[in-house]
Image (cartoon, rainbow, N blue to C red):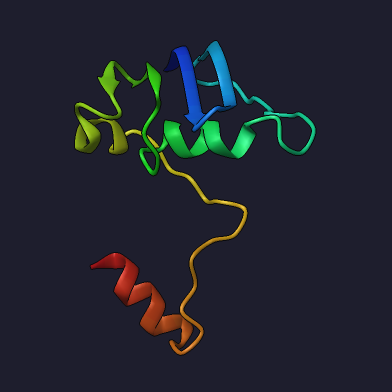
Length: 100
């Protein structure tokens, strides 16, 4: 289960995520929809540990993504909209690099 509690992200005076709360239960499929600029990517980046929150917490199977990142990340997988690719590598080289 993933639990997002009172999640806030500010960039200076700009509020990107405003006190967001939700739960994602195991065995279900969810969609994360909203207009451009609604905070979807920011929320996903916080949930996966790529970005810190201003306030709030994200629990992945009971592990806080900021306090216990290794424990939390063992329970999730995430492919961002723009995955990081190294165009100078072959597919095999990239897979070997990622596997290390």
